[in-house]
Image 1 (cartoon, rainbow, N blue to C red):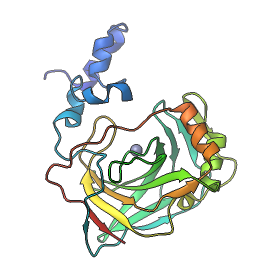
Image 2: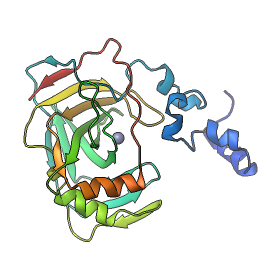
Image 3: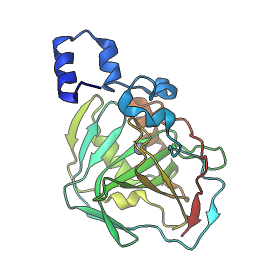
Length: 246
Ligand SMILES: [Zn+2]
């Protein structure tokens, strides 16, 4: 491929009506088109061809003597972004860490899906939160937690109250403790997988808590009003083994 990304983008600017080209660049994708993410976009080939894709059903996990990553997150007035695919809270640099196997991963952002992306025995729950941490090898450690309707959760209520209704950014008025979106129970699943959005890069150490966290049904409904469905279809496990511990 002779084109660099830069020359490709310059070409796009010169050809503003080239919808097919914009699609090939991965500038636009939708959940309705999730089966074809890798087909139109060279950079997202892993979405179609990868053998370690996410999300998956976590039902057939093998019990192991493992513990969840050690999480240290500072409460803060996160920047809240509606990016057209989800509501995302961006963390300040150096404000959160996940430690696993002697390595440290820095909290970058967390965001939400409905229904949950991971499934338990074929069942998807109301929502799932993903806490994205970056390692220094270009790999990611993502902590997942399931959210279900029940008692209100202060953190989610504060985020949804501030969430822009259209694409854009907002600031929280007061600090939020994101760890309120994690369950008390430590049982969790671990497996190697991918980003669940294009380009579906297979760089994610997934750690998903088993016990769901209660949140207000009104906050789930508020999220669904903005994003009625933003979960990728379940992917084949192939030869991977899912571990469970806690
Ligand atoms: Zn996600």
